[in-house]
Length: 114
Length: 112
Image 1 (cartoon, rainbow over the protein chains, first blue to last red):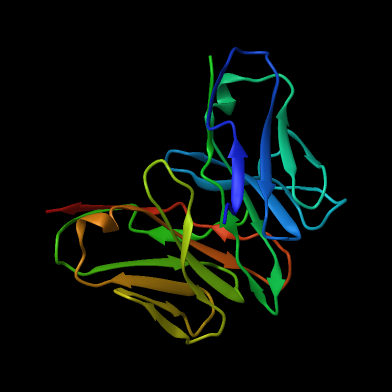
Image 2 (cartoon, rainbow over the protein chains, first blue to last red):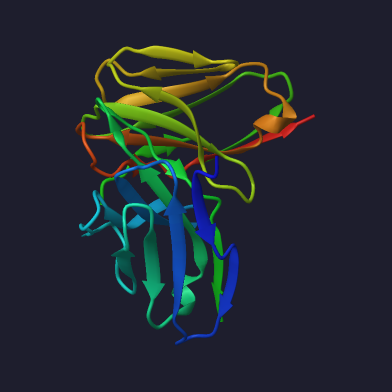
């Protein structure tokens, strides 16, 4: 019963480095999401994928790219990391059951950009 | 972007006290959800509400979907130390795979 799995759990980057955050879900969910969480800001949506093969921008997409690799996996890429991207990143997934769209979250990736 | 107004931002309470927090919006939601985030973890769903006026309990937690569909509250009765964490409300405007809108969270501290 893994649910939503994020890797890595922690990462330190230097300004300008690139990296990819991985997310996989084993619940056969159609939709997947990437959020960032900063102190006092709550959860802000970066990108989401309503279904396999589609991606859409959220509230704060600048500086990020995503790939919905297949139904299970949704990755988030930072091409040139900046200190402003220091944050905790959460992946989530959801599916429709009638009108019930409930998101399930991973444990997060804690990223520091120096 | 769209935001929910969640209050209070933080609370310090004595163990055994009751707690109340709420979220309001300027627009109508069809779904209200309440999540809890423990330190170092991702948010976990506590209660989901789907109908205006709906009142739902989960143990010591009770949440209501406001009759105007623009607000929701969460009550915690007889708080215990493990209630510590950040509580988030989230709303969805229409049924479907549209993203949730999250409040900024209420940080709860319980003093034993």
